[in-house]
Image (cartoon, rainbow, N blue to C red; front, side, top):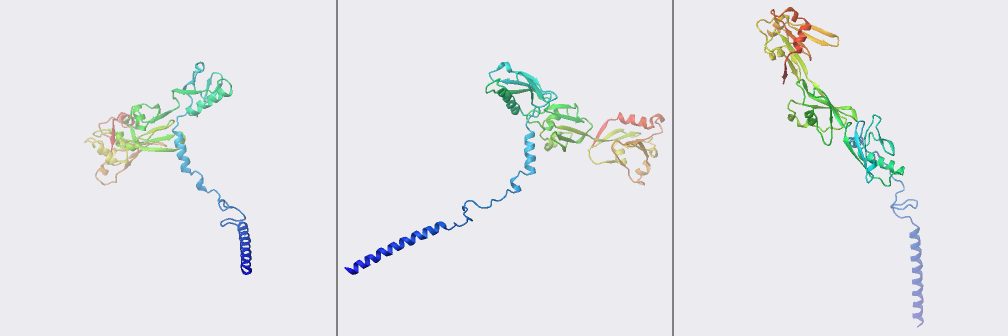
Length: 341
């Protein structure tokens, strides 16, 4: 019995000692820092947060894209005629035209500056003025634009009917050119488009007599755009040639021999050595005599012509009065135009 009691006492002491050691280890574990932490900082929260990089900021391309998207929104401007309605308050319905200062006059709230605002922005501004003044409780304003005088595109240059044409909804370049009666016979092969919000970045697009030949040039137009159709370069061939004419040069350039050939060649009465080129430049009108006979015989090099040059081939039968520069210029002004492809 004594041996059994001793074993029981020894067992109780062993259990008690084990419990004490377990408690000590648990306390020590709580006082140790967890992995991935420093100075008591939790592992899920890094001590040093990374500074924002440049990638977090919008790039220049993203800004330009946002600016372009915003430019497609129709905005009010001077000359626009607006009809303003306040829901359930018919006596406040009025029509007003945006003045040169960008303001409209409305009952109760006096002048309101709306130039540069979209329709939604102008509605919210008028609602705020009515509510802040205590005139209408919870006003709901709608604006209808009767005339969009400021939302047009200007067509200039070689256009049949130059002017300002409205840009409502999705309008493309060929739509505006068609509305303006098309291009003239003197139109060149390109047009320049300048956006109102990007005056320093003009866009040049190719044109053809048949606009459908270049569908990629039918770009979308924005309110405030300016389109200038370039005038084609013209070289005049007058005097004693088979077909005196004005040659429209859309591409490249012409030489004397090419111009003579396009005009049907010279005649039997042509005085070849009296041929001259009349050019009007910044320093005035200048003359250059050329030996056309030697050029035709390939004894002299061909001579290039510039835009607006007048190639004059005289004849012994032409009156002297028609051989001076004034008479030659008058002949050139009355010529029919021939497009050179």
